[in-house]
Length: 328
Image (tube, rainbow, N blue to C red; front, side):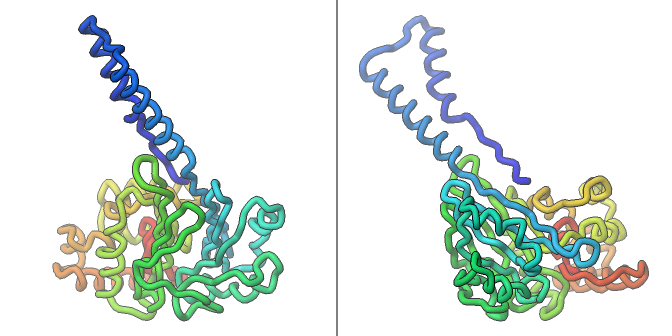
């Protein structure tokens, strides 16, 4: 769920001016004043209309629940009806959005991948065999199945009125890309980031530190996070073993009471409760016995692996989620 706060600043100026004039007993209704107010009113209407037409709809598509607990996502610009589907690895789950395509409710413009692992990109070619998906471009890292376009780092494209930017986050895989999306500029804009980063399969602690604490940390704090897996409940147990901060305790309580956490937390929240994004926190540094951020990252990963073995956990593969951003 994305929460949008729309402020009514546009109407405040003229209302305050009118009240002030009345208070002085000299309300100014000269032609120039009237024209000014009419212009302000028109600007208010246009600005509010612009906000109201911004609407990025995100539909979560759970896959392989109880095992790898993946998420695919359908992202729709509700004004143009243009849409993309992200990481639709299990073609059997296409029915949740295939009917919308058939009925003309959405116009699928592309398949998008976060990285090349089979449980994220493994369904690409099978989907293309269905009439509704035939000929659709596949946008993702260079090693993704059937990929037809690999944007450069920072390069963008559009889904109707939604701006999309590729953020390279190599480590989990060397072709890992997080996708930052926003549906406009100014007040009321919705922002989301779709992540597929995870444990250090093909990279180093330094690369993960860069991915989390430089690339993703630079995304606006009010951006909501949509991870590739639902691992929060398990991940937060490890986080509590490292730090008992109020933010981590609050996340633990939320995970205990809610089955799904995607789209419920922001990048700003992650900076508070994700231990992998708190490598400069004295509490985390004390727990790891390290102070250099990269060494802290490496030690945290080592601790996490030991924690998994100790608790007989099946290994997972997603970092955007000790909250949502995970290093599994």
